[in-house]
Amino acid sequence: MRVALFVAARFLRRRSSALLTASSRAALAAVGLGVAAMIVVSSLMNGYRQALREGILGVTGHVLVLGTPGGSQEKLLAKLRAMPGVVGAGEVHFLPALAAPAPGAQGEVVTVKSADRLPSFVALPEPEGSGPIPLALGRRLAEKLGVGEGGAVLLQLAHPGGRLVYLAGRVARIFDAPFAELAESWILCREAALRQRVPDLGPGSLEVFLADPEQADSFAEALAGSLQGAVLLRTWSELNRELFAALRWQKLTLALVFSLIVGVGAFEVAASLVVLVTEKRRELGILQAMGASGGWVRRTVVLTGGLLGGAGVVAGLLLGGAVVALGNLASFPRFSPELAAVYMVQRIPWKLAFGDALAVLGAGLGEVLVASLLAARPLATREPAEVLRWA
Image (cartoon, rainbow, N blue to C red; front, side, top):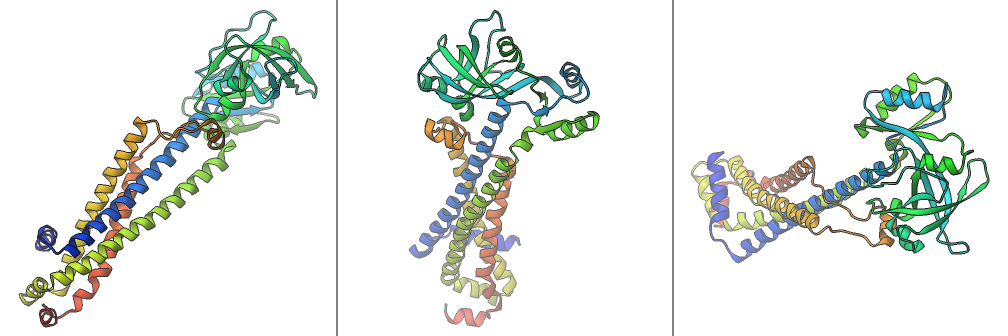
């Protein structure tokens, strides 16, 4: 094997014809670009999933409890806050509404979330008095309404009882959020402030925040077994299961498509091996005449293709990693408000996972070795005299 590896390296280092040089460079570039494309796509899909996950977790709790089984909400809240792994719990309402900057002005359809626990990037004052309710608006929604901090907003809420409630609001905070829907069509306020102005609001849902959001499903199963009465539990992953399942399938599909590009590069390597064997037939014939078996010649050619293709795979990994680093430095891609409404995020970060890089490395090397084996297979059956006849 050492001799075969030495001969393979000599084949690649020695000066060759223009045809062999061009075919080798083309194979190297094809494999490298295909691997780089797989790295870039994988990083973008990982970053997109991360941005959606962080945006969703920034809007709602990790577990929603719908209904109040076996007692008051205060008792249930106390029980939830005492459970291991819980970092917070509170009451929440999600109410459809129409927001306008002034009476008679054109309004925007929004979702009003009133909660005991607001996102970390929203700081609202504690409720006091009966004046306009303090509100937090996303920057994009504030621009559409034409209001700034301290401005007035009129709300027309859909009461759970089936009637309309009119409220005067004051913009206490304008926030930026990575989740486009939150910045585009949500208004946040404190639950206590809304109850002061709408005393008959009725019981809402309970949202639970966990130290590890990935444990939401197991926490919900344990909670369901300890509750009595009619209760409905929904976790953040369950509410968005279809979305993340679609992202997984999209990532797998794109990986399959770009692996075909790497396959094209691998067969470029096979083509360059055919040229190399044609040019080195004299040397190969002499080696066979000196006692080298056909299997040894085949291994030498496969190692030559592996070295050439492996260099392309490594170059593609480095190129893809450089693109990922530059994309993060440049904060690219960043979407316009119109596209952000479609993709649900304002920016996609780049996230290269170590496991994905290993998978790309393995797939690239595997395709190169398969193509090299197919190209080297006929060499094992050639006789030395036949090779030397054409040398």
